[in-house]
Structure formats: structure tokens, C-alpha cells
Length: 132
Image (cartoon, rainbow, N blue to C red):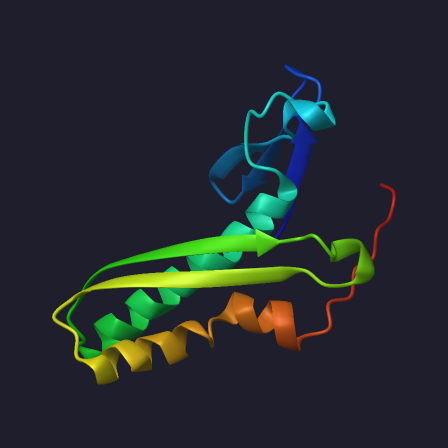
């Protein structure tokens, strides 16, 4: 699978990200030379974690017959020490439905095992950048 990121030409910094049949804009805020026409790449990275946790928990609850009615994941970033090698994300889950404390704990554990969480924390990512 390939993801394409192409400058859209309508504004200074905005690019269009194309994934399969989906497209969305990424941009920078005005302070960084953009027009805030979409999330920043850092925000997309952070959002991937929240989306993965939400989808993983919902998939698991459905599979196990757990009465999860709704889920909300809020991701907060502390990038104050990023240049020193520390990037902190806090994912807070709000679960609703007729859930016991044991089920809530089970779903929290499942959220901690989502594929993007594991990718961000347990896998060495190798990146090769080339010119075409």
C-alpha cells in the first residue's frame, strides 16, 4: 500500500494526503507559515493512536459481547522535551454502556495493546528516503 502526499498548490503549505480512496489536507498553523487548513503531521500521528485505541476497543467489545455503547479517546501531547528525545502522549478513554468494573478494566488493557500503540513503543521503525 502506498500513501501519497502532494502539495495542493492552492495555499502556501497545505498538502493533500491520499490513502486508498480517501483524501484529507494537512497544513501548518499560521505561526509556521501555513493557513491551518488541516491537522499538522504531528497531530495526524497523535490521532492515529487515538483512532487505533477506539477501533481496537470497539472491535474487542463487539467480539466479546461486551455492552459498550460508545467510546471517546482524548489524546494529549507533551512535546516539551521532544528535541531531547522524549515525546509523551496520554490517551484518556471515556466508555459508556452497561459495563462492570471488570469489563472497564479489561477494555482499558485492550486499549494498551492496540497495534499503533505497539508500533509506537515496541517496534523499531526503519525509514528510507529516496528521490524519484
